Image (cartoon, rainbow, N blue to C red; front, side, top):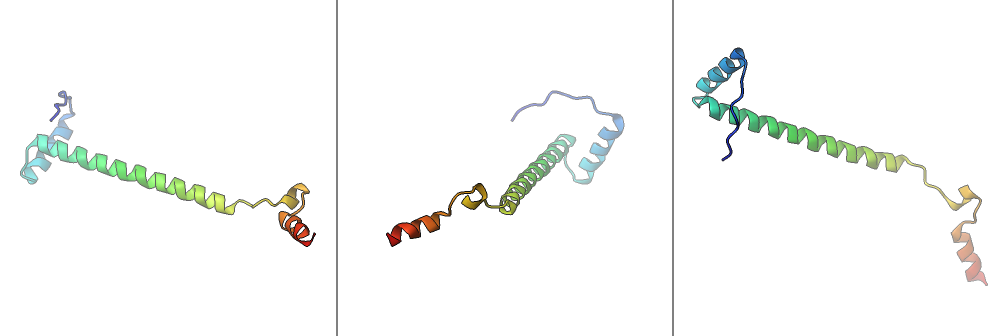
Length: 88
């Protein structure tokens, strides 16, 4: 297990950590690890949700795009060209 260098916390924050750890009958260190794990998991879930939303947005935009046909460029429809070839 890795060791995190000691950090300086505001007194009121440390007191809240102590109270929370005491209420859950764990050490302050364990409580900090739990809080970090929960925060990281929440962050990961938010990132995944944002990625899914981005994919859905791109898919929706692609569905809404107007499909181009050869006639839009003044070209003949390939279906008509195939029919002409068959009739020869």
